[in-house]
Length: 281
Image (cartoon, rainbow, N blue to C red):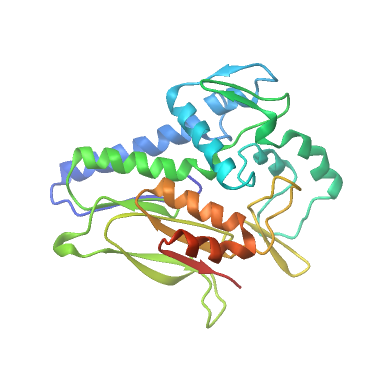
């Protein structure tokens, strides 16, 4: 899930609390095992190793592919789950290495949603192409976990997977959950720091940004979100975007769409009329 996962719950009975935590953990591991591009022998690995042959997928995978297609349309092609292959050239480890133009150009022929065939339930990639659900999988996992929790208990529960989170309801006494957003302290420049506190009584929060994944080139911080058209990081993107929405999937979709708009992130979010917080340099 790209970071620590946690469950916070107001549950008096230990047996119920354990059942909730175990269900959330099982959900996280199931989705990680099924959809991580770093693991062998799962559906993503099978698709990526298909070498131009068609692969029939199950309903859950098909739903994620449908959502990826929607994101591609809404972003005018900037959100593209085939762009993960560019990670062969880019390593966003906080260092200073920027790949040569030749490295990126060699990979660009393998990037492009329009180059694959998706006719539910069959996907066919060009040889050498890959898909990566990293841009949507974590938020999907949060929503799946919250649904499981709601079936087990009516308690107030918060599920947090690597900074993307959702709650079942407000805490006792109608008290909202208080959530900190990591970012830059404008007074000291230190990071990571709880730069803002948000009260959340219902729904979800998702954050996209470069706090941990970036490279620096000639004094410029380059985020890990890549433009599939030229293989380079999105220009003029905020340091982070956080969105509140009814579901974590929706929140994550909006944060990603905003980041992909670079300098126009704030205008996009204001036009959508949603609660959001943007941090820039």
